[in-house]
Amino acid sequence: MGASLKTWSTPVREEKSLGIPCAVCGGNKFSPALSCEGFFYVRCSNCGLVQMNPQPQIAEVEDRYRKSHGEDYLAYELANEIPFLRLQQLALKDVDFGPPDEKADRVLDIGCAAGALLEKLRDEGWKTCGVEICKPAAEYGRQKRGLDIRDLPLEENHFPDNSFDAVLASHLIEHLNKPSDFVREVRRVLRPGGRFYLTTPNIRGLQAKIFRGRWRSAIFDHLYLFSVKTLRALLEKNSFTVEKIITWGGLAAGSAPVPLKRLADKAAKRFGFGDVMMVRALRGE
Image (tube, rainbow, N blue to C red):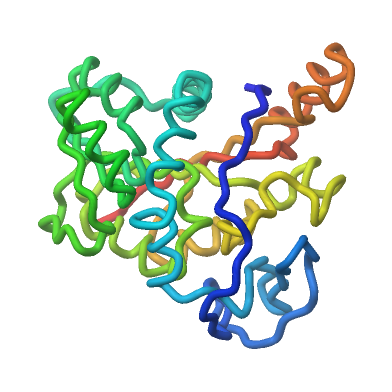
């Protein structure tokens, strides 16, 4: 799983921002972490979470996807959905996500874009539902693929308790102002014994260490940059049990000779220093 995809991001711009505490531990002491072009990240002195701080307000962030750049985002997703779908499917296989059965057949994909993965899951027999706040992308999935995709943020859909057997969220949590609130809502809509499959960039990966502020995931749209440690802490704080973590992506495509890249990719997956990580977490009783 070493393919390199261009990371989509809105341009850096002036927005209303607000200083906030650490999203994992609530701490208020920070040190500089990454300096990027036009913005920066800080690191929590207590738990190590890397976050943008001060941070754009929720309305500003949602506007990027719901109004200002919706058509641009849909175009990006459609142009990249085949390789991105392949990466998602490989990662899900590695964390033992399989076809539905008589005990588990309801899946929610949050941040599902135009619904490429949802369509595949539906074909496998899953009862599918998606959440995508980019209205053009949600509409594409509804009209072109016949999918149930809601174009409101997760919390505003008011799903009943225990609605789903599995919840997926790929490259989403790093965009959210309040990741802890999001994880709590995921837990509420999951049934006891259900599983949360969460994908996000890995700030402790090899590429992040090499490129620092020029890392491809250190972008204006990523409000948080998690490590395995801080993501685990966030999930456990919200009553999930982390069952499995994988990482992938040792070196970006084109950054090294192919044999070296293959070697780095294998090592990253084996030793956990990949550019991206996926967590499988269990919702208890």
